[in-house]
Length: 116
Image (cartoon, rainbow, N blue to C red; front, side, top):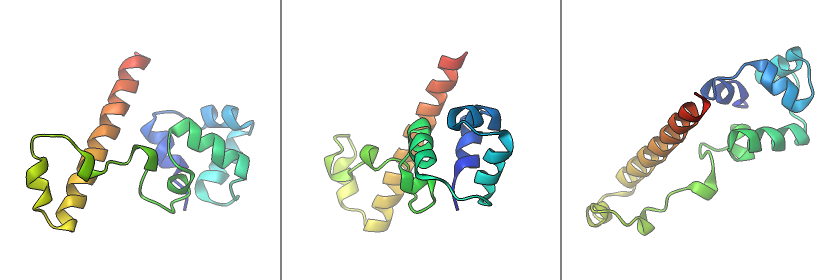
């Protein structure tokens, strides 16, 4: 499973934009999104760079969009950091995932503002 359609929808672009990026026809993008045609390495790299995600995330092999931006809770310097240390690993992951989701939303909101 790849996440091309999901990422395209999040970025609010149509298949034509990706077709131009990859030098394909719109029908080719549809085939890539549905998995009827495997992604070539060159497309994987271009799409991952365009959407700002890792290739593993693009291909559905990881749920971490960009491991370089991954948050390490042990390094977070915020007021509730001491409280976080008392949490179990499951709750630490919930906080980590929530922060990552908020950052992704904020980035998307900022892109939307810039487009206007």
